[in-house]
Figure 1: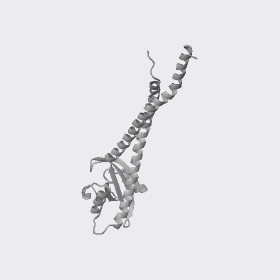
Figure 2: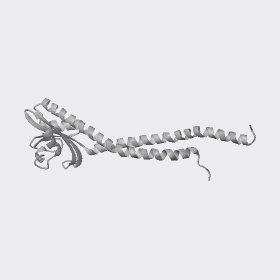
Figure 3: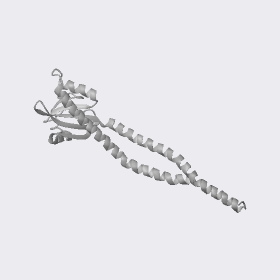
Figure 4: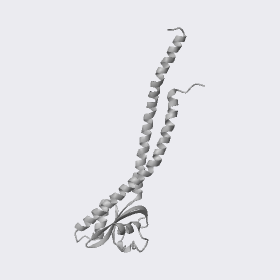
Amino acid sequence: MKNRPFFLQLLYFVLPIYIVGWGVQYYFIGPFIEKFYIEETREHLASKAYLIQSAINMKKSSVSLQDFVKESSELSEIRITIMDTTGKVFADSEEDPSLMENHRTVNKRQEIETAIKVGIGSSQRYSTTINEDMLYVAILVDQESRPIIIRTSDSMASLSISINEARGRIILISVIILLVIIPVVIITSRFITRPLFLIGKAAKQISGGDM
């Protein structure tokens, strides 16, 4: 049976190690990427909520809170809800607040309960209002000498797109590295085998009487 070329033997050794190593890396990096994007989105939503608080203080008295929330939502591309600490909704960018249930007495929201206790809270869950999985962030602030809750939220669908794009980039980079590894292995095998080839050739010449 003819021996396989050395570069193939080297590839058979290197590739399984690379593939296993990449698989382990992807297994551990995948959840890390998801956690990273969720944390980034959570911080982004919190920043937006505090900006909305500042903007409310500067809005014209002729502009209603509901109109302000809708306009701010269109500019920031997030959902905004404003309520008092009893859970009664004053304004919402996606729904008529008069038709919305009380957010504390009916189906308590984790982000709201946490915000009332410590000033800020967040949660992930399915929204029955817009029929999507959402990431929520709520903050407790003082507005005209009374506490209110400003809640911002974003769709988990858009977040999943970003996470999948990041994972796709990792796969692409891994494929590029693999394509680089193959020619490197071939070149390396030639550097290793050429001296051996020359030694073997010289040994044949010597055995044939060519000194």
